[in-house]
Image (tube, rainbow, N blue to C red):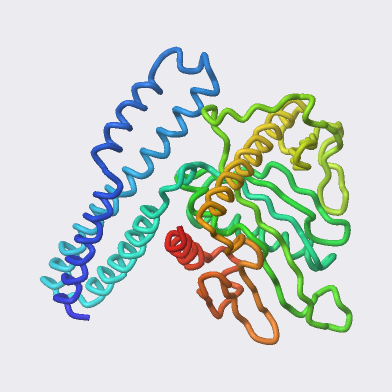
Length: 367
């Protein structure tokens, strides 16, 4: 590719980035950052720990968006300089390196552009992901663990902090369920498109006759509750059970009954936490998870009422949302967007950006 074509790409990306910056409203974000930074600097901030956590969390999100947009802008403006230096020295390898940098900048601009589509009420929040094995016995339990690894690898690739709150291991292999929190700006808006039933077709490693098996696992994604959400839970509405945490194969993790399971009697929602050191801490974390799930339930009920008023009978898009086929051929296909790739092992290693981007655009088109 000639240098002139590189510069044309840079020009087109400048237009795109300027449009993105307008949508993000950088002046407002700068003002928000200044106000939040002042709040976070207040000497009595931590007199109210819950409020302090909200302030510092919002500050972190706004700062992350501002930093990302500034870094992308700086990298984009550096590309022509790199090309000029490379051409001045007639260094083909340096020109190629500038091209690779432009490819990387293009990718990050596209990610930022997709983020501008996330305008839902809770889209900018952290999220809780719960994965459960469904039909398929030991196959499904193994599949649920494979999905857990896929999402953890995705988060690792993007530098997202993850806190695994609870994992219930199956007896033979895999997991019955797991819940983990993802800390990142727009984590909920980004990962909520992963909600639904994931289907795996493969030659079973647990079948002595090497037959092909189909198994299912469900993925649930909910926004993390904040103090302003007013989700109150009466102690009479819940049942609290304590038990000993367990690891793979039933091995005890702790020697005390510190793990906590909470059942919300009215809805049947069950949440657990075993990663904290004390029963009190585990109960507090489990209650926060329960609040998030109740918040999401309320949001879904409100959405269902609006859909009924609009005559929307399309049903939930979440069920049977993606198929992963490892045999007799190899393919991963999203059943809502028709986006597909032919390398399932890369997908299972966390390369799901294409599916997420397609899912966000699809959801926006159906709103």
